[in-house]
Amino acid sequence: MKAVFTRPQALSDTPMHYCPGCTHGVAHRLVAEVLDELGVRGRTIGVASVGCSVFAYNYFNLDFQQAAHGRAPAVATGIKRVLPDRIVFTYQGDGDLAAIGTAEIVHAANRGENITVIFINNAVYGMTGGQMAPTTLVGMRTTTTPFGRDVRTAGHPIRVAEMLATLKGVAYLARTALCGVAHITKTKCAIRKAIQAQLAGLGFSLVEILSTCPVTWGLTPIDAVKWLEANMLPVFPPGEFVTDRGQERT
Amino acid sequence: MTPMDAATAERVLMKGNEAIAEAAIRAGVRAYFGYPITPQSEISEYMARVLPSRGGVFLQAESEVAAINMLYGAAGAGARVMTSTSSPGISLMQEGLSYLVGSELPCVIINVMRGGPGLGNIAPSQADYFQATKSAGHGDGRNLVLAPATIQEAADLTTLAFDLADRYRNPAMILTDGITGQMMEPVAFRDDAAPRRPVPEWATTGAGDGPVRLISSIYLDPEALEAHNQRLVEKYRRMQAEVRFEAYQMEDAALAVAAYGLVARIARTAVDRARAKGLRVGLLRPITVYPFPSAAFADAAGRVAAILTVEMSAGQMVEDVRLAVAGRAPVRFYSRLGGVIPTPPELVAQIERLAAEVGAR
Image 1 (spheres, rainbow over the protein chains, first blue to last red):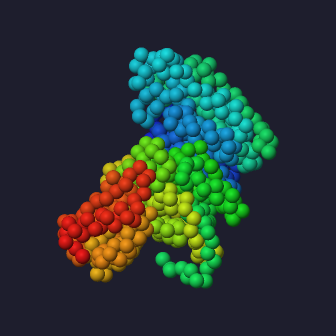
Image 2: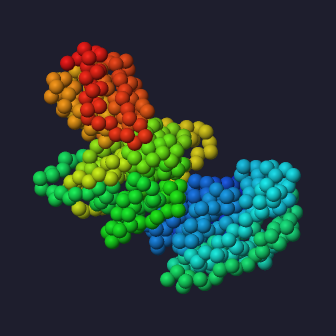
Image 3: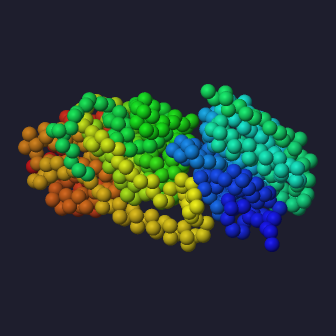
């Protein structure tokens, strides 16, 4: 019998702890498939951040370091600088990357640090129970914006991809979404291009992946995907923001 | 530590900060991450100038927070690594220190202390003793802490710090001050050959076809975290074997002065002058302040009439002295604060006053 669908070698055989309908599992699998297809699993080091994906290392079959909240790009920088021929990626959520870790992500991008960042944007803090994230939509209710995010007191959602695209150290930057097969396919394509940019030594690469958090959103998994499509895509438009800018580094 | 043969080694005139940097390079440091802050900037500048041509990586981080986390990543990848900063920067590194201890990563941290609290000033101080010796950030962690009194010793202890960090898989800190960092003295370096330290088997260097490795400090199960902590506590107990101190003129001493680092070299002059006046006084100088040479103080307490502790802090090491002495001898305290350095005449006056008080000659 021919196996037509198997677990990627870069994923471990460990049941995931993520909530039903959460898209972390999809994002993990896409990263793992790309690492397998590029044949780099054995020389890849992942950096887990703080948030729901803190235990990502349980699910990836790779060497991993677990970083303090927001510091994954600095940790990845330390690894990459002493092991420049390895593949180093971080896996960070929106609270980790766009709030407490803003300095680390901006400066890693600006240095053109030759690492890849997988940035999960689901518009809330998931692990701590659904508080406002820097990417929470205007008017969106969370446990710390019980009357909806008010721009007069809480500001607007940060568009990380657009912000980082202004920095010349960035070699590849895309925003994708995990809603429907077409978007998921584009997500995998973007992850592949990001890792390929790193393999080519072009500089910093990042894929912002719009994701769901059905439990803290108070929606069923299917309604969460619909909500993402209807509400997040207009605020966070998918697309490639930087491609093939590696030459500008020299 | 092997005593260095100063007669055969070439001596060069260097700032303390530069001597620390040079010693680290000779100890095989592979990566240095730092953020500018006075009075330690010469370490960063020396590393920027010299380290790349000698096979290492220099990177100026965006903050001390980033620097200590770069250290974490590179240490976890198996490299000998170092950062340096001064007091406010150490505050910012506390989070990272906690993770380094929890994940058991060897690294060297230089603290060239300045006056505080807050922004304070850039003058020398010893006010970070608690922060260095009592906890590595949050959560029961410990640093190995070495306190040099001369520039030669700053270089030698930097070398030792790398070895101790590796031996115990734990951060090791050099606790020094703005004067020792900025002052120039002759220094001789040990063997120029960088030690060939193999990449540790636990390092995350890419798993290849072998088992995967993990650098982490998270143990969600309370019993697992308790077991992890108990293992760390057992390690701190083993670290006590690394205690180092200097006893100067203590053989017949009726009074002891307790001081470390810069203050100890001033106190040594004061001890000599007090001896010239006929006072039998000695100096007990911790070289490691964690582990603290408690046994040496307990032993001295049974032989002297009193101990005078001198610090450039409002009274930090004196707590460890009192704990070690445990009431067997009176412990007095004298200090200057805010970057003011005590002078030998000041200390001689303090020694004379204490001698009169306890009737010791």
